[in-house]
Length: 272
Image (cartoon, rainbow, N blue to C red; front, side, top):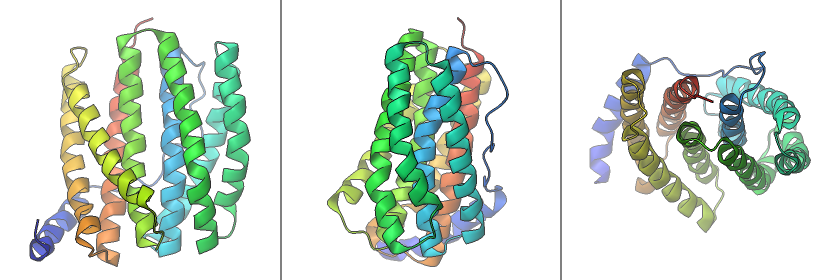
């Protein structure tokens, strides 16, 4: 794609983003409910997303991209991660899964402390250094719960939930680079996350368990992903501006919202 083609595309993206309300606040507290294995997989998967969402929001604050929204996102994400961590630790159906959540709690504390500290470039470097281990352990725990469920729908709840994480992970890497963090892992991380999202979305859309409503929701998610992927092109074009960063922030939220709804739908069709 040539650089001179980006400006018209940015205008079309702006129109699309202005037409769709931005998701700025996920639930601050987990729903008051007795966890089932399906809802546990959903919440465990949401922990993966929150690990990346915290990093994305922190980077937005460093860059001054929608700072008021980013501050709310950061606060709510930290609060939700902690409440769900307590829920999942209490629910853990096996000693092995409980041990994973004990490990996650130990990794979470320094990450949390970095996230709630005054925002700075040094703080962003700490966030960059700590977030991957939190994500990795949250993912291992989610996979363990999925295996424990032993069902195809459990796999779909996990896979759909992971798409939420990938939306935030793509934006995180974009903002890390925009803030001046230079590392080959950032380049590779963004490329890998984009590919993984597209492969997983194709698998979800082909799933025989899909209801008509789920199929429609995935079609919406695919459309929102198209806007987000287009917004991310400024990364490879080297034309990151305040406007392009706003596009990435907004479109990543819309993908997250679409996939969060899809994940809830998969949870609702889970049969024990």
